[in-house]
Image 1 (cartoon, rainbow, N blue to C red):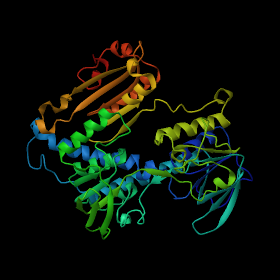
Image 2: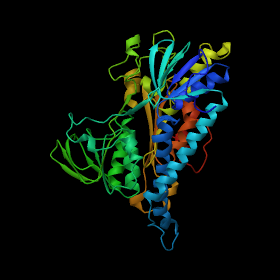
Image 3: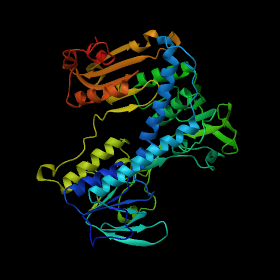
Image 4: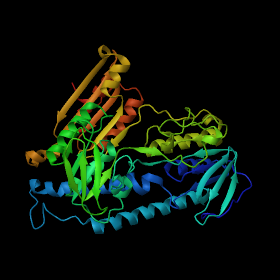
Length: 472
């Protein structure tokens, strides 16, 4: 079913607002149970942040950077010949190929929605009542959808300071703008210390840009286990990424797309070609009409929901990034499917809800990071120092055995265990392959595995992952 220009039903069982990962997953699952479903998307392309300006294009860029690293390592494995070790990456020709792949994904999303019989509306949504949604098309025409239920899945967007807060801030770009860059910038300042800042800085630096990170503290990834942030910060510095610690941008001067001058409050001045703000994200709740209906928003603008994604206003639910909890694509998908299971599925799903504890996640940094469960400080606070035992291993992956010392990435693995049975409540790993290793160990933590369970598992040798079942 192609996008429609007006309602095709007198009343819908549910209307999903937002065509990102959560909205699409929830709409498809609801329709699979026979529900009459409408999906509203403002951008006229499905997939949301993840597909268009997030996970997918970011991982493609990470792969490009990873290949660049592998090529530089090739001589260590005695690959010789013209171009080995110093090939040129063409950002200008790579970007169109990457964008074409994203467009193919948009088409796949369109087809999947159509196959399930979901009615797709492109336009801006506004909730007029718990049973009424207004759609405004790009040409200004309006119509309303009547529905039994509404699910808000509008996602979020990058936060960027205003020019009133920081003069010249608008001369910079956000993480969305990173994917619009037609050419690779030579000098880049990345402001922020979270996973988005780390990932973009890593890609740019590995592909040859001169990168400076402007951060408030001493390490990146301050919400992660301290071992992770400390290890990554040290390695990023070792590879040549510059840092301005304890710093804030006071003002930005220049012309967008040309040389910019950043003045920091620590007295430093930076000359860059591109400034990237990576200081967080906020929910897309403006102009939805939610507050007028009694839907509560927290101080960050996130929709407040209970464990079943209910807002407290009968008939209105919310999930994904707009609800401000665990801003991850798989979380939005899982929450959406469980919501549709509960509302429209068989009796066994009538209490279905997402468990937000022990959600594994990774950071596509250089090297990669995997983490699940409690950090060491969180475990000590929750269970007491006397009940927490830490196991830790630092090593170099076998891959680096043939590579010069200065290019040998660190691997550091940590287990956080509690109680006399040493139940594993946290696993935090950094090093080559950590992104792929973590998924299986996420299952183990969710199932309540103990240190003894890991110890009794026969190791796969030689691998990095075996360190997690051989720690002493």
